Length: 223
Image 1 (spheres, helix red, strand yellow):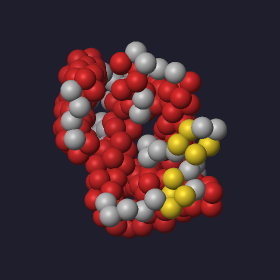
Image 2: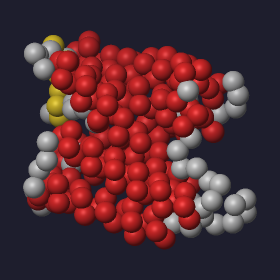
Image 3: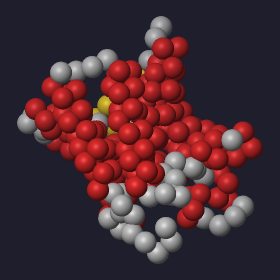
C-alpha cells in the first residue's frame, strides 16, 4: 500500500454516516450512558472492518501497544499526566465523592475513556484528508460530542461555547498523548500511545468527578 492513497469511501458510508445517525438519534431519544458507548463501539468496529478490508495490509488499530511490556510505560505516563491535569480540581475543588464511586470507576474506565480513545484512534487512522485537517476535525468532533444535546436542540449559549472549548482542548491533548508514539523519537515514544491516552483520560475524569471545580462560571465535567 506504500505510495497508494487509502480507500475511505466505505469507511465514510458505513462508518461515519452510521455514527452521525446514531449520535443524533441517541441525543433525541437518550440512552443510558453505558448503552451509548457500547453501541458506538460496535459502529466504530464496523468502520475498522471496512477500512482494513479495503486497504489490505494496513491496520487501523495497533493492538501491539496493549501488550503488557508496551502498556506498562504508557500506564505510568498516562497516570502521571492525568494526575497533573487533575491537580487544580484537587487543590481548589470541593470534594464530591459519593456512594456511586465504584460505579463511576467502571463507567469511566471501560465505557467513556476506553471507547472515546478507540474513537480517537479509529477516526485518526481511517480518514485521509491530510494529517492536520483530520486532527482539527477530530478536535471539533470531540468538542461537539460533549455539547451535542444543546447544539441539536438549538439552545446553545456562552456556556455551550465554553463547554465545547473545554472538551475540544482535551480532545487535542488526548490526540497528542496517542500520536506521540510516532511523533517522538525512541526511546521517549514508548511513553505515548493508546494506553497513555486512555489512562490519562480515565484518571482526569475520576478526579473531576471526585472534586467539583468551577472556573469562570463553568463547572468542570468529565470529558
